Amino acid sequence: MTASGPAGSFAGDIPIDVLGPPAIPIWLGWLIGLSPLPLLIAFILVQVRWRKRLRAWVRQEKPQRSF
Image 1 (cartoon, rainbow, N blue to C red):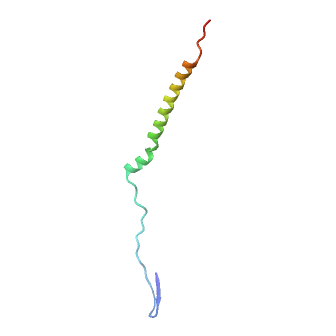
Image 2: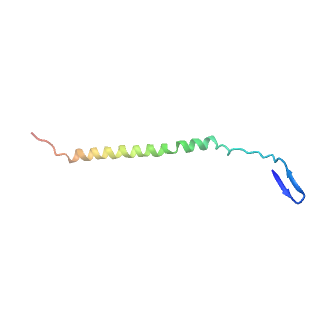
Image 3: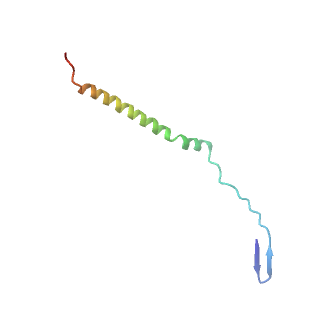
């Protein structure tokens, strides 16, 4: 750093420790990483139930064949 003034100029070093951002805790990283999993499982379960209901409805609506 250099400073100039009426008494003259002065140059010196200012020690500064620069660090990166702190790491997130491991549990928080896992929580963020696995957060989509419950939503995906719930979506799949809803789709399976919907398909079962649709198949049952189609079976009921089909006319019975008589020969």
